[in-house]
Length: 191
Image 1 (cartoon, rainbow, N blue to C red):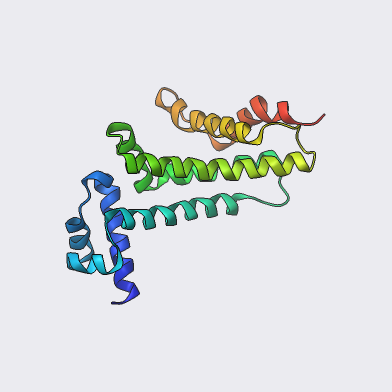
Image 2 (cartoon, one colour):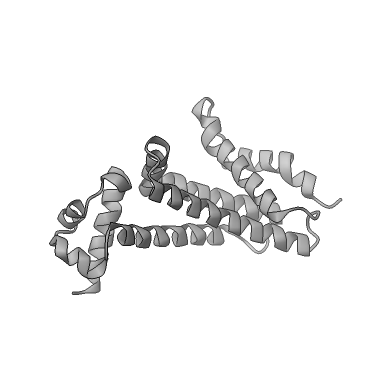
């Protein structure tokens, strides 16, 4: 068995999970999309959960990379936090698999999908918390609870990106950055 076949299976499973969600995806669908026998899948993956876990782990790594790539050493803390948050949430919004998973979590509440959503949010929170902790250590911002502050920042971004546009014209990245600065960063800034 070649690693190409393994990647074909991962690609097919990603497509199936993106189209049908976790619960409705079967190993038969994945085998058909990968153009392999169902037994071939089991030479690489013990079960659907293991296959799903590998796809999600890669997706979370890609999301972390998007956040890291958005950060520029010459930017201020608020610019980097904004850019990394926006990159992660944009990643989440633009990838069909994450969209389908959020729909499934909302509509069905599949436990394994709820776990994935929690992992994604934990990843985002960890990255933000790390940036806040470093800013406190460098005395760029006032001392605060980094975990709680990261949670508030993430929820603010989610509200401004996803919730606002349900009933209003979507905000641009610049408008979100300005609101973020107005409502949050100025309160943390050291005078």
